[in-house]
Length: 202
Image 1 (cartoon, rainbow, N blue to C red):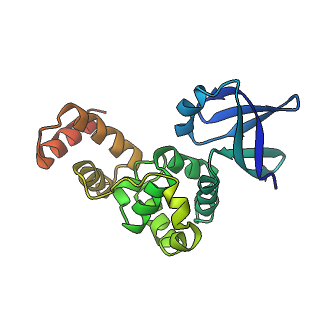
Image 2 (image 1 turned 90 degrees about the vertical axis):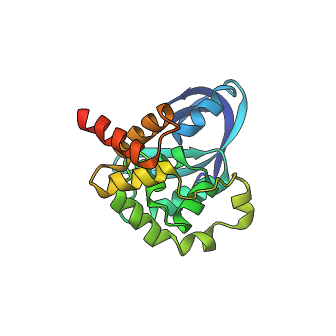
């Protein structure tokens, strides 16, 4: 297994990066959230922690800026029904510590914010990882990422309500965030009505 790659960052695009090492360009699949941070490092030498995967006749290298992020990626792959696409989708939305807290608090609404993660997938994630996470991710590794409080916010409440009505997590989160951003002073009930109205138009 390739533990890490150290080379010059020559290209960055959504979910992708290219490292040049000894005249060879290595294409890496990475969490989309890291694109913006890496743009400022173009042309510089960086270290990326990796997971190599072989599928049929193709080889994929998944890259992460921190070792604990790669460890979480590997753990997510152990969840039934979760492949690299869903794992990267979660890491695009959450830091290691944020996802840790969301799973332990069984915050289904928040987990549904990741693209492609619906209510059933989020419940399966909680069921299979709630006991594993404290054993696999150490307190030192959690400290590497900032913990955001995941208490039940207005956005979480409404997103969960929409998931219960059958909307996908991504669809619900997008609609809720848009309405809440434009109507910050409204009550939960008023916001829910506006979200349902906006979704009915689509």
